[in-house]
Image (cartoon, rainbow over all chains, first blue to last red; front, side, top):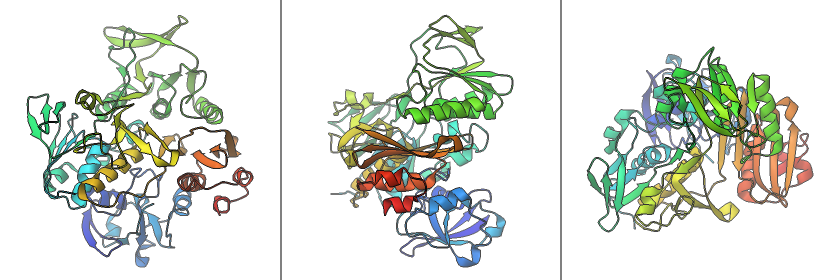
Length: 106
Length: 409
């Protein structure tokens, strides 16, 4: 299990044990964490699972695909550390990961 | 007006019903929640059934919206394999087919839609399937593979997704379509011919403009599809994908206003203030088009679950959306925003031969819908333009050298 901290826009923290193999998005959705909508269920089709990855974790969460890059480019409030959480696969190496959520997913 | 202690009963444990139950808890609803579903498993995502799941790229756990324990942990009384039979609105109770009765303070009808069956001989043969439920998908996956021939009746999105997955699993695939082009009800000619060519290059056969009059079989198993011109298309399995109809009978029988589904307002409330209807079963207003219609899509189910949850918990209604949907076939990502109502002009941006292009449907200088193939910027920006109703510069829109950000600037 990897411990992942999801921080809502208002600062509310949720610390969740997520099974390796799931995506960071699935870890949130399956535990009913507010703030990650994931309308398309992980198909990289909607950009409603946008999160900010804490700087020190950026390397470990991997490279963005062209598709993700392209979707993110049109999401709101995008920052250099923005990711689509459905595209980050959880592994033991991500134990301790911290992600924060934007104000809205539209 | 919201009553945090209200007993909310949700009929239908699909994407809409399951999401509403979860949202109510997420938003602090304290009263009892009962979630009644006719399938034996908790709510799951249907879209992967014709895509990643069918190809073996997603497992059952990953399909589930929430793990089974979620419902008990959040005090949601989930009742699988249970069907509602009748509403008695004057007493605010639901009668179940097993004889049980559930009293409600608030009710949400999320009974979805069912696949339309073909009223033709042989439709009850084994191997003649639909693709609506996880059980349907299990059966299909067990039936097709190398050396098998799959006949798909209906060249709509479901049919094409099944065709693509069938090829990925090594089956021979033939698609039989009544109209003279694919996606005839939902897409323009450009997209129809693009998909036809793309599938043909990957080994799918098409019979367009053909009428299916029966299925033939041996020992109870389907062996072929009979066409009106007398030909027999030999096959080992059939998927019928000719559309769906709303499961709105329970609402009609109870006297709720219905049109092409259960009529609701922007709070997803029906003509009975204690009853909501959400998802595929609802006939709902869509303000950006100034009309009402019924949609069959996950984003619509989610939006209406949000509307109902906001109304029930006394929160502000969601801001309003541009409807959208998606389809995956082979390495193609199709993203569609909006609906092509009253369109007087169609613009193609990019070259279909590159499998990266977008089709924009305009009414005057307003964007009504966009179909984007492997083109997320066109989809994302198109969706925003559809929602804002802003006038669009058509020349710039049709020119791929002008970025979508500049088009919308």
